[in-house]
Image 1 (cartoon, rainbow, N blue to C red):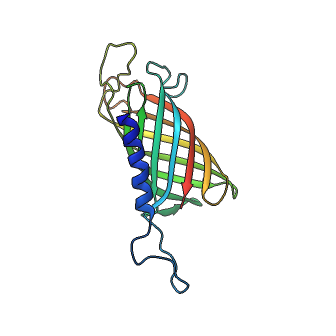
Image 2 (image 1 turned 135 degrees about the horizontal axis):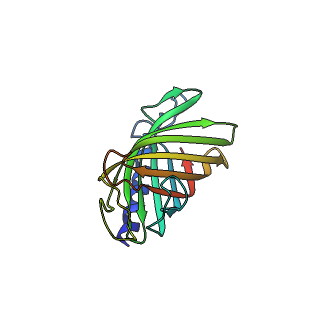
Image 3 (image 1 turned 90 degrees about the vertical axis):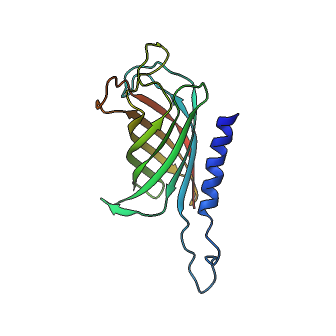
Length: 190
């Protein structure tokens, strides 16, 4: 229950951050300023998926995911836009959960189809080195995170996407089993 409370708190916090501050209301003479949060994404992910980047599955279960994509700072890169993100993935079985942040590069292929590629860091609560056959040995508390996401905009504000992410220490520590998640997410763009 505590995990779900933290997850809901993250989503509500994001909504509150996206509301313009006092004095920023839209008027006929004044353009509305963008809030701090560009988009909120939330979803359900399969935990430690076998046969992807990390190669093997030891942990299991379902992950709840919530992520804030910030409006600023942002910049254009190769016809896409780069924005900072911050997210939380909670494993419902008590296996590895993570808090992560980094940069996302978003490219719109059509008016409805988008592609995200991201990189950053993740802080996790999993095992660093274990002989438990049901736990991953991740080698260090702070890991690199790579994400690939393909999505479809249902409307100006709503989207659905398929997301893959991988965390590992990039062989900077030993062991380095890595962990992959794959799932579906809903996005609300402000």
